[in-house]
Image (tube, rainbow, N blue to C red; front, side):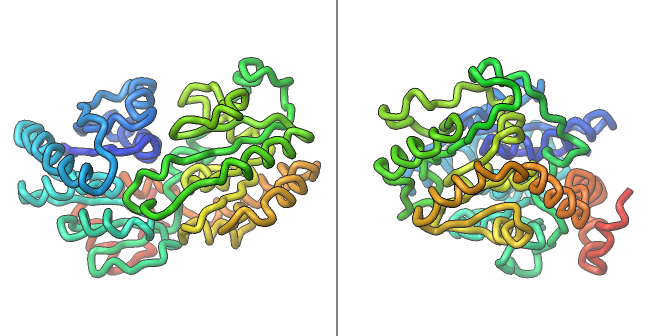
Length: 356
């Protein structure tokens, strides 16, 4: 089978990397186009995954609108030469629309209910939309749910083994406590009208936490100059080991919060936007959701001071994962057996539990 995969975010590299490697080893062909966002290209290079760049994209609704035509034209020319059997993505309007023009099926994953503009840009042009069971919206007769989370594609214990090589580089003693804070850029279409931490709050939060543990800040944009000394200096392929060993994660970004849930690291998610996936993880004691900064400092300190928190969190994580499927295995079965897999899932969604 020949599959055209479009990647628009660093997280998408992780979602699909094991799938790509497995099906390539079985003789299938995958052509990848990738936006140059953050560390997306660095990750693809790290995993030796070949790709074609579709540029950096644009900010703002007008910029995104014009970039849509540019990217579609580029992908259309590439696809005409490659002649794929189907297109695959995580919520890519470009893959969806080019597939529609070429009369090829587009299968997409998504888990972000708030991305209303994004959903409108790919849903009409897609044959199937796959989401976690926890996804709160209903996307019509194209919608298939699976019993798992996208982060399990790469952080399930079957696929991920953390290392501790980074401790020395961060000037930490082995197994020393530390806290990760994540700031986002707020440039996505579903972020319009939203804003991040107030600077004064962030400075006070860092200062208070540093009484108990070092604080490292990871950011999609520039870190405030007042907190430059806290910048996390690490490579893209180290971040999940860093999150795994962290005592606590505090952040505005849903992806890293959910990653921590699957890793067994306590996560405080602060955002007026939430998601069904995070709410499900909160029900299972894996994430703490705050829609404002009130009470965050107190919660953070109580977690840091709890000597059994990591052990308890890993136990909760293991219990949680046992209730779900191997999402990479499901992805592979569904894509390689399409369209028969579509029919089987609509007739009996429990088929996903029987995949070998």
